[in-house]
Image (cartoon, rainbow, N blue to C red):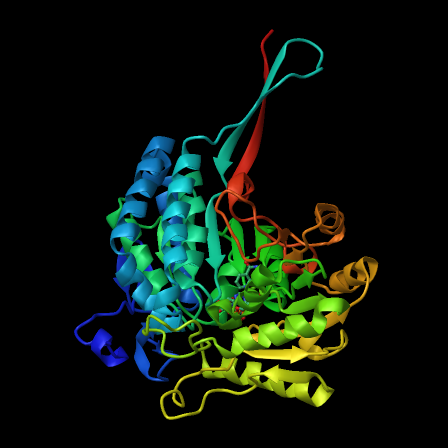
Length: 492
Ligand code: NAD
């Protein structure tokens, strides 16, 4: 088995900003360290973009938008996206190795990401040639022809979190390319490597310089993009708190905003559920990606008659999970992304204990000699959690399940909805009437019935309430990147 040092030996990692088709240092000359969360070691230095670099990138995007990119017909944009899909497929192992090293995603869990990454690019390629307006019958006096056309919204600023660097980059860049927009992506400071490499692949696929720019940096770079007067739209994924500041920053030029924000999703198991399926799925609804998942079904409501049995099985499943080095094929949970995130999650675990929740499994970081330098946390299950506890109300973004017993359908719907978030939710029941009834009453953007965490590129995804607005995936996604222009022509 290769160690992290073996994998890094002789490999050059991306470390410069990608602006106007060139790899360049930051105007300030500053760099920051990117860290391997499995070892705590520095992987490399990355140029630290700030407002001056965002200015350069936005100017390059505007030039490209008004220049060569505007002459790309839908079929040309489709060709580029299809080439990009082929390149991602061919270079996937190399690309995703950057995610393994930069944020700790386990190598053995990558097959679905490969499928998803390539499928996304091919899906948006198909949309590139199907975008169209409508001819509309009207009731105006005289002969007037009315129709709409779709136009790219313009320069898009995209800001991402760390939890799935490659796939989140594709999720922002592919719809921009399909619709003819130009884009400046500010990836998360914790995991900038795969987004930079993907930006370089866009050039290789034939995307003209300046259409895709990637500017790693910190809060200041994101804020500069959100405030920028020459950015037409911000597509943001991240915390609700930062989402709120994006809305405020967007007011300056009333730019369009779409927000994929946080969650505290309920996963509801009724007494008639198929427990053989529900137990492992409920565990992985939180533990996948070490809990760093906006969709995590972290409020696990279990109906009283099966509560004890369910928790016993959940605890056994959790104890058997393999936590460790993401380069080991058998590993199911890697580290969390940073020391800061590990401390934050461990603080929540302490709060849960102090508030009186019953710790069933886990509850500690791994501090044996093999793991002590990395940021590993045991998958953790709290039982008998009270709705009012911080661990039941706030997004932990780590491998922590809060199990809560419930008695009746009305009660669980009321409690599931009693949150400011509304991203996803799960329902486990073999009764189709229960499934339909409960699904309609839950205030969430996505409902899974007898499954969890399934995402498909053709199915819209997004939040209700403070989980954000706008949709990614599906036809609704490209609408976020398009203007509708109405045309009225007198034909008399
Ligand atoms: P974060 O909001 O702290 O940071 C996200 C990005 O915003 C980073 O690139 C960061 O540099 C940038 N940023 C920080 N302050 C900014 C500011 N004032 N203006 C502009 N940009 C700024 O989020 P995080 O901690 O990196 O990620 C975790 C959060 O992301 C969780 O809340 C999670 O639920 C959410 N998330 C949501 C989805 C979704 O699709 N709904 C997907 C993944 C993650």
